[in-house]
Image 1 (cartoon, rainbow, N blue to C red):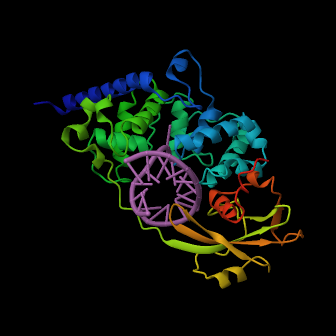
Image 2 (image 1 turned 90 degrees about the vertical axis):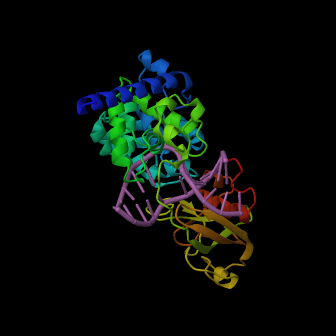
Image 3 (image 1 turned 135 degrees about the vertical axis):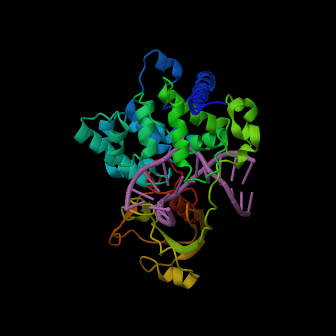
Length: 370
DNA sequence: TACTCGTGGAA
DNA sequence: TTTCCAAGAGT
């Protein structure tokens, strides 16, 4: 009969073996990503640039690697250092972020860069607690930067880690209640000497092997230690609560265009949905409309004609917008509005939903180069 | 704790 | 077509 002490020692052995297997797999199978310092470089003493680690982690929040890549490259080209980003115009940052979604991240990104430069001498904090003080950096991102950029043994728990760990240990507790238990497991496995590689290895495993659907268990380095593989179906984990149904919202959008192709735009409020981004004039997005009501709610009288409609899906609601177009002579813009020249349209801080609206009214308008 | 907050790709 | 959901944070 094993004593409690023996039991704990056995558990520690298992955790240590898992970390070693995972790191050995990562050395061979790690993904090569623009923001990543590969393990061979780390072993040669090359240190990651905290600015790049931070920038990538903010962009990667709830966003796929493939979506982030071009934005990461563009940001690094425009603003190679945290100081250059701190000195940037906020509007230029929003323009560069347009299309990536979750626009509060862009506002917090700029605010964070300013704090790092003005309050911290241009250097990111090297501890979780220090990082947590900065805007846009929560529990996950603080742990990720501390471990990847500074080699701190922080427990990095993201969606990948939640999936890998709940499967490894058959944790049936639903998220988010299971987070405490997941974190405890990660902290025990962390004893390894390579915290940053361990975190990135867990994420690579989750992204390429231990996937949400149809996990490739036959290729998994942790297969022999995985409780879900041994006892049942890995796809059962993690257990998540049922999601709420998305309500439908409706509205009308108005694209006023001059003979030379300029389009009337305005800025949305700084906070909330699409905060700080640019849009064409629209009605509210709650009421059901008909054509007469739509044209009557335009920003000014004009010969508005239906140009079609667009559908867009946000995180918590779906939106149908009727699109109206009017040819108007050049004039002073209404209060709070501005004209964007045809050649400048593509560079505006237009979220995807607004590019859809403008495309419906003026095909090709947002795809022209400046 | 429970909402809010985007987008596009995969199955 | 529908559904899921991706390196979460702020309130």
